[in-house]
Image (cartoon, rainbow, N blue to C red):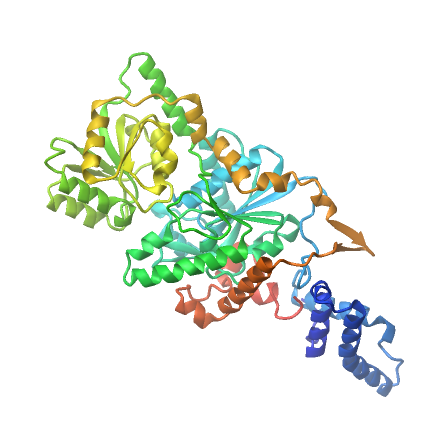
Length: 577
């Protein structure tokens, strides 16, 4: 049980705010001694009350006028201790920011999905964590959402659920090690999340940044920074971490445009995405030009393919060298069966050129919400399409296909396209920014018109794919992806900054920041945007109006139970900062 302590009064709160604002006020030209006088003046009322109370009781004064700061520190500490809150720093500066005593930098990768949900934001950050940790130059933490059982049943396939985070972590590690062939040394942590049926995505509940301890808050990689921060109501990432990199996975605007009132919704989401990425990131990486142009962003494919696919490609090349037939089947398409994932384009192309592609048969693998409608449409149009249940792209039954058809224009960077190329297949895909990275591969056949689509399909049917060169195989690998990531995110500069460890010094037993430079105009604007966003996301009515899940400003009781968390009001008390 915590000892009952009277809450801080208004004068104490103001005094603490002024004292903690010292670095900021110093930049405005307010002298330190003036700040001390303001603090002393604010504390005098309470001090006088305590003195009068002591004299009335016939006791010596309880407060020494020369120890006002010590008394204020004691009061703050007492209140925090009484709530069970763990204090990790000041209002303007996080004094416990990243401990470098072990000589290693810390990288925290935060993403919006987790296995067994087989989506790009669950799989690719997992591989990124494994290959970043492989170098052993830095410690890596992967922070993934934890869903309560009711949400797990909605999201995870084959009725798979987990009773504890430890159980899910074991599943994730086993899945990963089967595919990469080495034991990855990184930490997996969980933050509370809730599933939105309308958006078919997971929304963080509470302040996600608090699940990375301040001593490890060094470098943050935000997978889908816009998604993570739409409703983020907590510490500003760029203040808690030394370097924050956002990786944009999803072309949200393309999906939203297909909805009712899509143009208006897309306009609003576009500007909100610009707002939150500017406020919360130092650098943003876009996987392709298919995403919106965001502040501080560059275009670079920082994803690789599962090593399994490269091994399949090597096996195919060996079989062909021995004169064996590597491909015994024709063409296939694989993907989640929703209209936006290329199925509309596929049906339209096959229907328009049914006579031109007479005798051409396509096998389609996939499950999804639109499966019945897609299949009934193909049947009504009498298309030569064979629908089969979805399966892993590395499944043995798919090795024999020679051609992968992918007409999707909603992807940012199609993982299945990269996997098909790694397996040595032809890929027929649209001339679209999402496929720009694949153009350099001779087996990638792009089309710009429906007539061109027919020509590319016939070209692929009539020829054999070229074997991948060692350089092409390397460019598809995760080793190459990590190299590109480190370069384009400026992580190489940050990781090699030998002066970093000297930026903090000890003084009078406390860790304090060295001189704070005057922020630039751009940094001040970014700070203002972050503050405005914090204020707006703190209003439940505004959150609900913009599509937030009710009750996601904080995590709920079930999350507390599953993740062994203190209640939000104890973890983040109103006073004490």
